[in-house]
Amino acid sequence: MKNYFNQKLIYPFLMSIFLFVSCSEHNNEISSFDGNSSLKIASIDNLININENKLQGDPRDCCGSILQDHIDQKNLTFPEISNSDTGLYAIRDNVLSKGIRGQKYIKAYYELSSKVKNEPIKYIELTQLSSLLPGIFDAYNKFNNPNYNGVIVNTQLRDKAVNYLRLYKSKRIADKRYQDLLTALIDDIRLLANKNKGQVKQFLQ
Image (tube, rainbow, N blue to C red; front, side, top):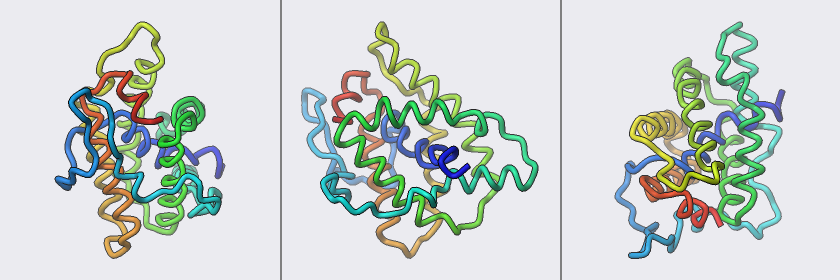
């Protein structure tokens, strides 16, 4: 169960990086595209060193598994969440792991997961994630479609992603590292709104 739901909390975060959102809680301009819409610097680059061997956070503490355990223990029904493991593993293995920056987001996931593993679970976390996942997979399918080169994200998906991320910004307010990681995710997400598939691929390299 631990590995199973590993993806389901923060891989939506990471897909948010990959796919979502034109707005941010900050007007941080560290990350920017140049005039040719190629990425200069991503905010996550300032926080995660891909060459550092030590993993900040234990994969066994993944928040996703905790959410799934909560669903099981409470006899709740969220089929979008419970059936999403294969697709979310595919996002990790086929998209994020292929580039240096994508790997940084995977490392960020494990660190964030370990930080929120003991936080109370709110029902809204489950409802929002359940609502967000279908849009994530639709965007992933567009990304994998060799005949599609357009924008990956629509306004509805953007708004759902922002709302979901803000749930986690409301946790661990005093933890600067945690807040900085989420801010970096949001700032980087903002860059990808209305970018085409080629630009997203370039971003994750």
